[in-house]
Length: 118
Image: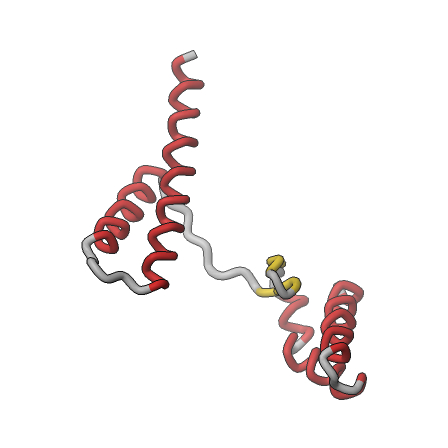
């Protein structure tokens, strides 16, 4: 774990140096951005690739629900969003994400049903 953290600190330091900071200041800022190393040792990490590089975060709380419940909740939220005649860009993005999730749930559900029928 220590080598993994050091890798990310070094990568962020290199990025900050490329942005114009001197190496000592870049190293301090990278360590400050990553926070307390003990926190990362005690928590699992998630990595997400973005256009600007990799983001390292602690996973958020996860709740598992039955597919039927997920379909109901997502459908209700999509319905509420669809009633808005002048949605914000964030609401449009939320609608797209809900539709993507619903498509995944429905396709996955239909595959399961087809497998049960065989």
